[in-house]
Image 1: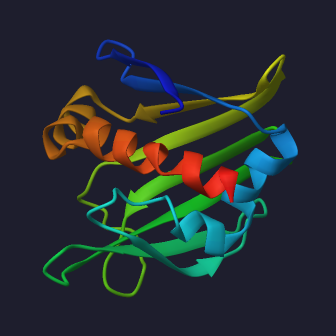
Image 2 (image 1 turned 180 degrees about the horizontal axis):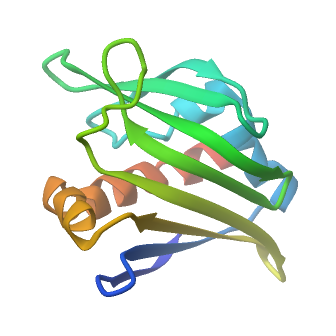
Length: 161
């Protein structure tokens, strides 16, 4: 599994996930830039993602839903803040309603993905920051670390294909 470290810092409202992959930054970037590749790993194995909109440019939106084993859909989205392909992506990550609009009462985070070349391939550092300790605790209670770990665990097979 590529996930090498998970650091949770309640005081700073952050979760940092560090992953190493035996591929170039350009190849790793494609799992974010290509919506069909994003679908293959963005949700936990039990909740695969379907991307319905994918505009990976500043100000653009990425909309998706995850589908649970019982068929229930869980919509979400990103507002793209910054893109420096193939090394950096910054988004506002939010829970969405059925139309893909942000649910104002739900927690949201800012995610910064940084991809750097290493001797053996690439390192991806995913830093999520919440607006409050309460919002962060809410997603921790929902299982964000377990779900994210499951999702990231699917990248090995995708990158090997």
